Image (spheres, rainbow, N blue to C red):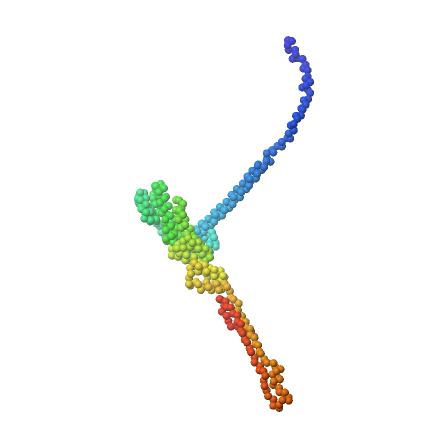
Length: 410
């Protein structure tokens, strides 16, 4: 096998391959410096972009915090207003219970108000009065038989008749009768013409509430009907205005007589929108506003705060020029100015005598020693005093001062 002998022979080393290879530098091409890693992070565009993103995040966070704070404030104000309306309603009901002699029920209402806000109107004093009455009233015997409560009679009409009656009553503007028919229909069959019944209930409640507020002066029932109507759909702009009027009137009633300044504030807002809105007693919003200003001025005058009282009276006179209030307003105004200084009497008098020469008079009186034995008086001059008296009186009376005669000082 001579052909395979070469495979078993030792291999001669190649001198060229064993020598280290040398690299010749190329002419005209400078050596490139090594590029640092992550150099793209230092580009201006990226830096400005990151800064803008950070600023955007900061502004977004600040806006979110501000919106959350404002929303929380609005929510708190709304909750406070609703709580105040509820307490006012309970207070009015408690006053009705006291008038009717239902002292135990009045006590429960007043205790609820006192627990929520001890400084709400005169709840504390009213509660004490009710407790004293209950303490002095003997308890009723518990063995008295209880009267059976009346059970409402179910409407015997069919569903079709109730729906038709409700339609006719709505057309005739008989809101309460329409509501009763619709509630009876809803009780008989809740799924009968659901959409139409809901719309009719909304219209009847909305219109009855508007009538109670604008025509009858029943603000609490009107607001209650509006709240029920809102369950079936949002109130329109006119109904929302009526609701705002009723609330402002009730807010003013809450401060009536006790805090006339606050009452005038709420009544004044209502006067700008509905000055002729009247309550069940026939008192208009303008009358309440004017009386609150007068009460405010009277309370300030009692405290001898004449300038503030004068301002309140001037506001009342600007609203209505009442002849009976004008003297009171003028009196408060003069008191605000205060007493003026006591007038001083200054007079200047000058006495200017013009006598003749005393020496000449003496020489005329005494005769010459060698003239005659009988002296003769020949007055050459006479003493004629000339007095000029020019009084100068300066007197500037004030509008609020009655001058008194000056007293002599010993």
